[in-house]
Amino acid sequence: MGIERGADGFRVTADATTGDGRVVLVGDEVILATGFRAPLGDLRELGVVTVMNDRVPALSRFWESVSVPGIFFAGNITIASRGLAKDGVAANSSSVNGFRYNARVLARHIGERLGFEQPRPALAGADVVPLLLDELARGPEVWIQKGYLARALSFSDDGIRDEGILPLEHFVDGGGGGRDAAAVAVEMSANGTIYPAVYVRRAGELEEHELDPHPVRAFDGDGYRRDVELLLRPLLAGS
Image 1 (cartoon, rainbow, N blue to C red):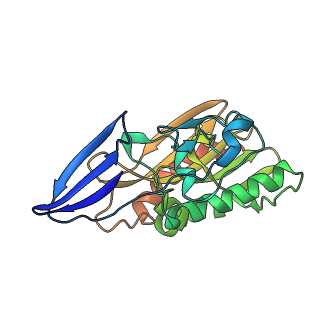
Image 2 (image 1 turned 120 degrees about the horizontal axis):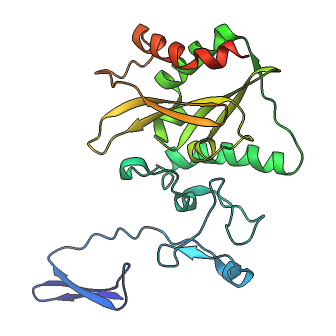
């Protein structure tokens, strides 16, 4: 791999990233955008399997090695955990504005794995809809990590609990023991339209509801309040 200056410009020889061999490019100017490669060192020898042409480790939804439990990763390497990737929309985990929110979720998850239970505040029924609407309108985690992170609540005979921010994939796949629960996320369609989404799990059945977009993305208006109240009414009645 290298760059050579010639009489007619630059000759660039580079290793292919999506296949074998090398490629040769010729141009008047060269801009280096080198990206990153995870410094895995000897982790492969410990059994950490990789994806994306051996560039990043294969990770669970909580950024843990899928082949060596107990090894977690943070930073832009968390892009290896793609989440649901609805409509092919990728998470912002490769940049600091995205992976910093992953790090908060990861720290809490590791703490609980080590036996340090994290608080899950109790909520009154009247506080549920305002909290979720505020999250949809202003929550930084769900806005930056669209379709990737979600705000979740659980509902049981013991009351309503704020489960905090979770990977949406974890919630959809029944994380939390399959209890009655609800979650909200901000999502984006394949054509770039941003809209709020509500997920409701009741009696083991999960429903996904995509709400209408808004021209200025004011997802806490009266129409959204009515929609969310209607969707959560069965859960609120049972708590």
